[in-house]
Image (cartoon, rainbow, N blue to C red; front, side, top):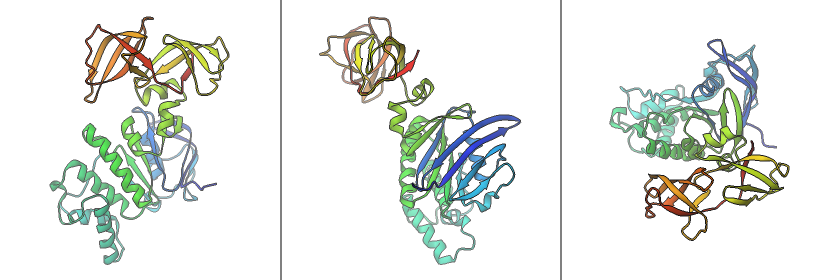
Length: 348
C-alpha cells in the first residue's frame, strides 16, 4: 500500500469559539494534488491554517511524511514543518527583483545552488531570463506564478494554496490553475488547494474533497464528483442540474418525465420507490430528429453553445445544451433526447 504524504485524522477545529471543523479525515499520496472545495465558511481556510501550524487542534492528528506535526497537546512550529504556502494576496516584495523574491527562502544555500534553483523555477513558470525584472513589471498572472515559485523554492514536503487565483479574472483563473498543476507535477510536489470555484478545482486537482459545514461530503476524482455525486448538495455544488421526480421500475430502471431510463448498474432502490433523478444540461441534447419535444422557455448564449431552458410536457423545466448555430426562438417547440449512461438517483 502506498504511504500517504499528508494524513489528517479525526480533526476538530474551532474558530472564534465556534466549532467549524468536526471529525475531519483526509490523506494525500506523494506528489498528489488535492483540493478542498466548498462554500465560504465551511472551514477550508481554517484547515489550511491547522496544517501549516498556525491553528490549535481541539482533537485529532496531522501527519506529514510519517512525522507527527500536530495534536491537541503538541505542535511543530510552522517554520520547521517543511510546508510552503501561497495566499490570495500575492505579497511579493516590490523593491527586489524576481530572482531575489524567489531566493528569499533559500537562506543558507550556497550561492551557486541558490542561483541554479532560481533559474530552474523561472524556466518552470515560463519566465526564464526575467531574473532582474521587478514585480510591478509583470501581469497579475505572472506575479502569481512568481509567488508560487518562491513557495516552491525550498522544496517543501507540502505546498498549501489558499485561494491564490481568486483576484484574477475568470478565464485567467482556469488557465493558471492548469498551469500551476503542470508546474507542481513537474517538480513532484504534493499540494492542497482551497477554493470555492468548481472549475478551478477541476482544472487543478487529482482528487477533490467537497466540504459543507465542516465535514467532507465526498472525496473523489473530478469525474466521479460530477457523474456520481454522493448527495444532492455535491451534485448541485460541482455543476448545474435539476431534480425531477421518478419511480423505480426495476433494479436498473426508472420511469421519468422523459420515459423509461436504464442505468449501467443496480440503482440500490426497491421497485416502486419514489426517487429524485438529477439531470445536468449535458444529459439532455437538442435533437431535431427526436420524437420527444419540449418548449423553449429561456436561452443563454455561451459562445460555442446555447444553454437552453426547456419545459417538458409534464411542466418540468430542464437545462439543455445546443450548438450556438442552432438558434431557436423562445416559445418554439424543439426536439430533445437524453444522452446518459449513468443515472444519478437520490431518495425522495
